[in-house]
Length: 294
Image 1 (tube, rainbow, N blue to C red):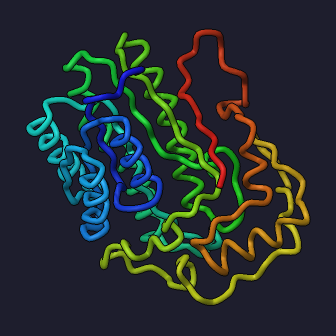
Image 2: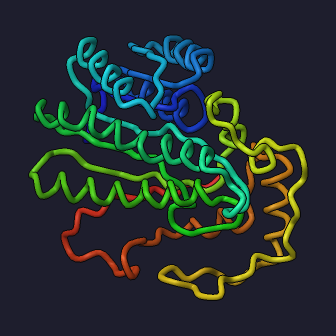
Image 3: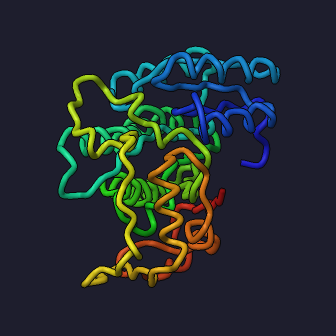
């Protein structure tokens, strides 16, 4: 898609962070916007910014974990604009803690938002985009955590690996179907967003152990270094660096603070992630990865 003017972009998780930035950029490109977020007040703030920029905007509070809610979002978009050309499945949450201490409710919540939220967006919009027959693009927000694992990020890392895999599968499915729809997966490093305070959107019914919640004010123990696993498995890990202590202290003392150190350097060069880490076969429609840093 070379010309975005007057096309329609849909962005979930548009109330703040990367989602808001995507929506603002699309408005700058002259696109019509459909923005969604589970936080109504934050969504209203985004809408005000987009209207000030002169964009046509449809806003709808949406819970991406609810397939019916996302389907209603799609219906509203097509009723208002008649099309969707760019779909950004961006909504996401974070919960940290030691993998063996995390309760089922917390794990399920993270997977519901970060994995099923993408799946619900694909199911609600892609069939309509295919029926429209116009060129389009799907952008799924993953993370550098979808490329390599790190401590205290269990469910988040699992969900982001799933997001990368789902994007690659979607790219293949659309390619073999002859569809004019591309797929990208966004894998940023540390970015100054509010994902460190995801508990603000934790459903009341999710009774989580606050000792494992990422807004827990109790400082986390900082390891002397991040030790390599006893069995590296299919994805090798890097040796620990002296900067690890500073990075983890920053991440767990002030979860929303932008960080740099090894996270930015590790994502500076695109890396393929797939079974056995093989390079892509010639002509493979593997999803693009956009590696951003703070």
